[in-house]
Image (cartoon, rainbow, N blue to C red; front, side, top):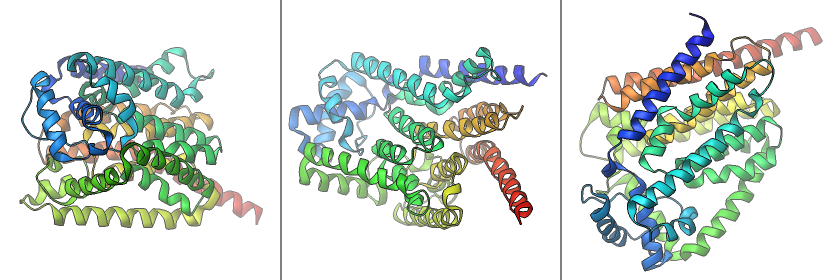
Length: 400
């Protein structure tokens, strides 16, 4: 089969799955309930009560009369960055608010995809292929989950896409300033920023500026007591307590530990996952220090993949960020005038199908699909980096 037709066929399968998911996803499982709860607490009880679990549960019970679902707290444990938008939305009936939120999410996703794929608009890529690339990202299964569940991961995806695109354009400080938008998942943003302490430090400098701005804004919203409550809520959902965060279904190392060893304890698996992630960040930082200014978007793509699977708290919808490494690999091959530029996009489509299977199965199929998806997305990055290192070493030998 011609590879272009294989490319289009995989994207079509992705799109069909995504449309089915968005059309059929059960309303009671929409995570938009979390956003609605935050908006209503802030509006009716004040932003300073935003991270009070008892207040969240009370308001969430009121919303569940409209939305349905189990009487178990789905905690809002995200930074308060979206609260100004969620407060007026919380006054709208749940169904209508969900549609407004979804429309905004879709618009943001379209902007993100156009930003990510802007480099593809060149003669070597036909308009049909460019449309297929963009559809491959929009139809990526975790991206479809973001839309269906009413999650806020669209902001995370936009932040990471802008960070990588600006980094590739050598606008290091600007890329660092935008990266804190990923602090909608603080642990993810931190994992992506720390290695820049050792290479291309202007990125980390921009990150500090952006974090300072967002932290000041957050404190002005919830006050110091609200920050203390937020830290306590993070501790509760990470290391103990009874809040529903679904570790056994997490597509990461922490979830794997729970699936392999089971048990009722949460502290030991969490500590093991956090230590592993810290070791990964340290090892990455040391490697980047030796590379210095040679750090490229390809390295960032691998950092995204490693962070996604090792960070201790992540869910299926957060894997939407894995679409970025695939685009990075494809773009790198376009720049190098390679004819196999579409292979990373095909790999993304196959990974999308694997993650769909993963979502409806249990271990060991769950973990086999997850591992296969991780391999397919990261393999082009490793291969291209290996080729670049070979070229660099050959060039240095000639110079000598």
